[in-house]
Image 1 (cartoon, rainbow, N blue to C red):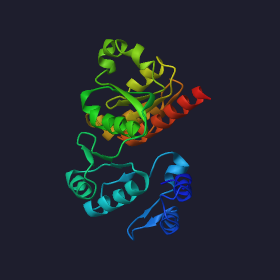
Image 2: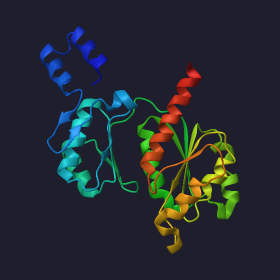
Image 3: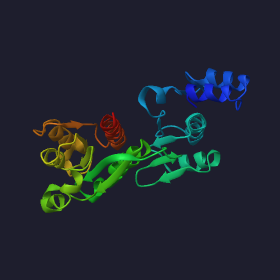
Length: 250
């Protein structure tokens, strides 16, 4: 609950002063001993704190996500497994597990606006792309997927490029030599967020070759996140999309 909403509820009598004080005390962060949940994250960045689930116990993930959801009505957990999901679902029955993306979501954004395009070079890049797509969706973006449009069959991309050009931000997900990001960057006006993946044979070095190729892209307007970081790309695309839509309205 945001401070403005909290004060409004006190003013109209739907929230007691004592309950409001309890909420205010939680506003900076909530101390769970093993985690300090940052409830002000949404005020600073426009989205509640996201839970990175890997290497956390299922119980830790469940209680952190519950604390965030109780405060904001929306929560996302990345790099989650089935055990994390079962623990979260026991506390938050509306939780959804997106198995391909390894993402847990609870709640929905109030609206979906704009247009974010998620593109992959190949089918094997889809898990990273889905992490990006679901993240952007939870950030309130209207998401469109264009999968398996890599440069080895350029006609597949060219068949979709008119639709991709309608996006406010494009996420390009590719392993191997990572060329997709540069090609898309040369075809669209929107910012491109490039995601190198660890897909590829030995000389791909677990995604390092794709990362270096994307960092050396000659297509202006292309930025690069870390290897397999679908979440970071989706979050960035979601912020670009929202600022674009809000700018058009002003």
